[in-house]
Amino acid sequence: MEPITQLRSRTVVMPSTNIDTDQIIPARFLTTTTREGLGKALFADWRYDAAGNPRPDFILNRPEAAGCQALVAGRNVGCGSSREHAPWALIDYGFRAVISTEIADIFRNNSLKNGLLPVTVDEETHAWLLAHPGTEIAIDLETCTVALADGREVSFPLEPFARYCLMNGVDELGFLLSRKEDIEHYERTHAK
Image 1: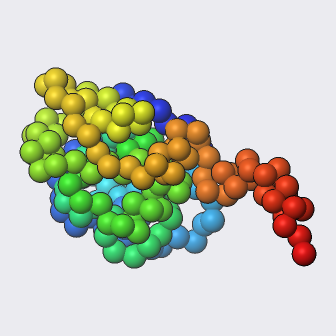
Image 2 (image 1 turned 180 degrees about the vertical axis):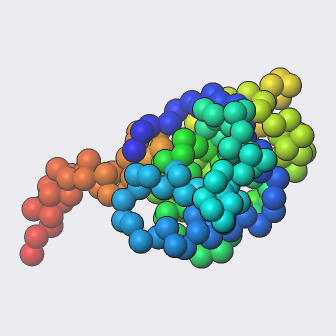
């Protein structure tokens, strides 16, 4: 995983509420156990027509979405079934953060475990972000804040261990492996 300490990006806005994991990555793309290439299937049913051609009116197919690393979604993003493929697809596309007023717990956990930052903001901030697509934001994991283009800085909650893992570019297994000597020492000293 690539560490995140600060993220500066323009935003892509998808104001739909209840964006579920099957909309993020349809079930027919869940046959792979690798992350590479899933960005092409991100929002596939919304992004492409029945013949597989890009829909020109869908935000990810428009030039202003290119290079954006922050997705601002409507309330209750990531609801539905648990699938790690959803954060994998978002990351493979190029997103590093998803911002909303409400992020489903399972999606939040899968995101954190895979290097995607779920940012929960208040209603007023969310409304401003939805009304200003493409705005430049700065997310700082040191302070757990989002700096908006209008000068406001808002805080967001982030569990300390998840923050540590994101800032150091490690998942839970990577963290445990980094403590291998301590674990082995404990096992030696506490053997019966």
